[in-house]
Length: 142
Image 1 (cartoon, rainbow, N blue to C red):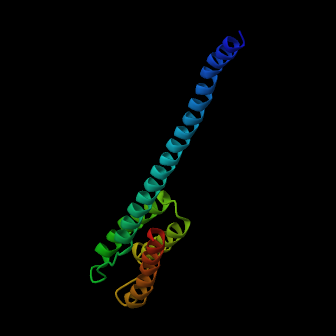
Image 2: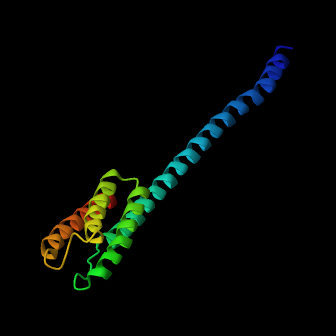
């Protein structure tokens, strides 16, 4: 009779033990899925940063043709708007600040403040601002 009781207790306990083991496996699986999701999120953020940097480097490389003042102003206005929009979409605060610095500089050309005569100093400053964008992007990517 005792053997039968032990067998019954063991038989009744088995599903509980199996259930507990399965619960542990489910928790491990959930953790694995969460880790995978975190890695996907990080990869997505890195892709966004790389995409923003590629756009930033292209947009910040603006050099107008000061020999044609009207065209230089029109081009600068379009580029200033593009820089502002990109800065607004950028999540990295340093890159955002760099883009806004470039945008403000380009806005001076759009406003007609920079002429062919004053363009050499502006160009040197603009190259420094462009270098700041590229340096920031190299830190983001690396």
